[in-house]
Length: 221
Ligand SMILES: Cc1cc2nc3c(=O)[nH]c(=O)nc-3n(C[C@H](O)[C@H](O)[C@H](O)COP(=O)(O)O)c2cc1C
Image (cartoon, rainbow, N blue to C red; front, side):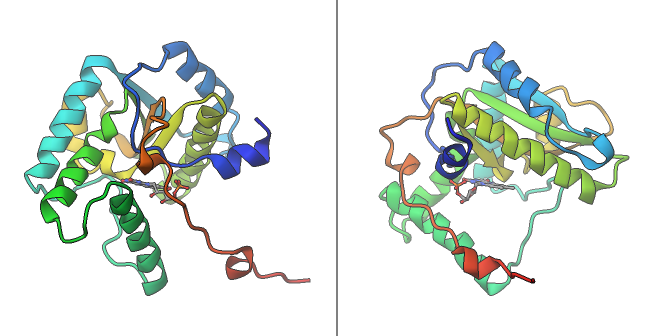
């Protein structure tokens, strides 16, 4: 796939087929993704690939914790307030997801159920957990994680795999540490769900929005 096409057609996938992702394919993605840039070539990423039974257990435990209404306590604090413009965009994508699922806004029960499905990683057969050593300056390590995470998502797309970056996967790091072996002293930054997209599902097809270039570019010359 041509690089511009790969970038512009990648989208977050929220319904996966149950087929497992071959381990060799994940290895191929990560072998290429290790060429991502990082500050001073520190390559601070540590990636835990979770699949099979441990993933099934984690998906269900994470769903349950969410459905119980447990407060999120991620290793990286999540934003609680957004300036108006960003809040509008955040709300808009939520609306599009619910519309694609035919869930009316006022149907609180269905919305909570959807939140549970998200916590269960939309049943993705593979999860990549991106971790960094807690001794690193977190802000800069986050830039490096962002770089490799996007590279992985693009490579996955180029190989016909779908991905969804999921803050919802790292809300309860204590649960992750319980279900999955994460070394002491590592912060869990973000999870990326991986799997083959369900190409029929409307949730994988709603129109996405982006600001126009003129809304975010300032030319100085
Ligand atoms: C750091 C980060 C966290 C995200 N967390 C979630 C999440 O918890 N649930 C979800 O459905 N999508 C999540 N997303 C996906 C965004 O909603 C998505 O990237 C955005 O709406 C743009 O859509 P697109 O990626 O399909 O182009 C996350 C994306 C990023 C970069």
